[in-house]
Image (cartoon, rainbow, N blue to C red; front, side, top):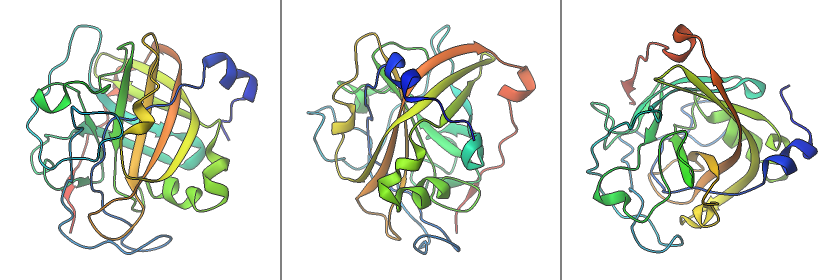
Length: 237
């Protein structure tokens, strides 16, 4: 398994973050709760305090700044997770998180004012990626969180590929169960770069959620094909 030592975690700086909650379906079968159809996205981050609860609806328009391209793939090799990543505004995915892919918030638009959400490479920002807790998606996160509050995940490497052929490496530094607010985002360092992964804890489109925070370690060039998997999203049934 790809586990970094605690010394590396300390050197990287354990700064915790997250920037929003949304509704995700839970497993259709196997470990974890049973999903219900037509699960609706709950919220975009509120521009209020970091501990605020999510509000309904999304209206931001994605954009990418030079050197800060959109996430295209997320990999946690130690957990068997490898998913294409598409925008939360991908057709069919704004109100119903999609299956067979993960999705990301880009941090632009009025709904994200005052939050710490951004694209990879932005100092002081959280990269925020979410997916259903289903087989082949983020179910391993939920399953691991049910034992010792997910301590087994600490130190695992997470790789996030981007559209400009880079791969960002993070190390999991915090597992937050039963989250009902955005407080995990409150301690982002101005010069820090962080990642948050989110998935559901139950079978209904409601709080609470599971959040996994990871600390930035490095960025490197990536093979173009590795950074551009072909997504095959479907609207979950």
